Amino acid sequence: MGMWSIGAGALGAAALAVLLANTDVFLSKPRKAELEYLEDTDLKTLEKEPRTFKAKELWEKNGAVIMAVRRPGCFLCRAEAADLSSLKPKLDELGVPLYAVVKEHIKAEVKDFQPYFKGEIFLDEKKKFYGPERRKMMFMGLIRLGVWYNSFRAWNGGFSGNLEGEGFILGGVFVIGSGKQGILLEHREKEFGDKVNPLSVLEAVKKIKPQTPASGKS
Image (cartoon, rainbow, N blue to C red; front, side):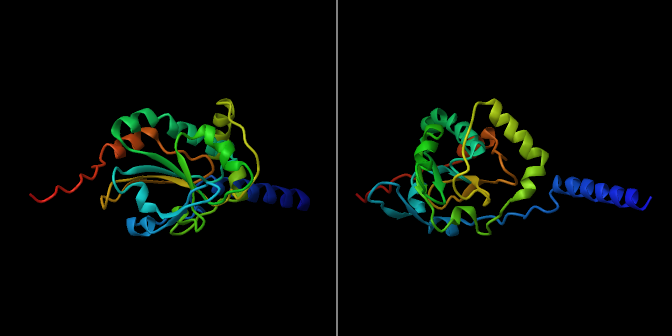
């Protein structure tokens, strides 16, 4: 009876752990990013001779949609990139650019990611678009039902990937208005494959007010 009791207790503890892992109890809560925090971010182009510039250049005139990619080689990130890219014709019509930032540039990862993403990609070495408080999901993600559902959905969509690069720091999507209009949408991944709703992105984009050039004095 003693061994059976120990076994039953272990199974009960394991079941409780799985149950808790599938709630939001142990998920770190994201802290909202301030416009001033993001606009001072140093970004780099990915050319042979990279140019460093302040992130506010991306949205200063017409606003922008920006994806903070968790890991370019991840098939879940590629699926989300393809979803966002499906909005590109509408974004072009509204005059709002689509961009992405990555936290590292290794091997051909960004080049292999580019077919899934129809916008320019920049390097955020200090990972400011992943902050102000960086959130991580590690092995708990392997027992979350949401992650499994997201994975099957991406596999069924024909997406594949690799294991290159850092993939524990969670990413997100921002819609940022022009000038000082502010952050109109901030979606932070709560687990692997937690995609932003494209309709929410479009709703936020429609609130962007493009900057009008100052008229000269007569």
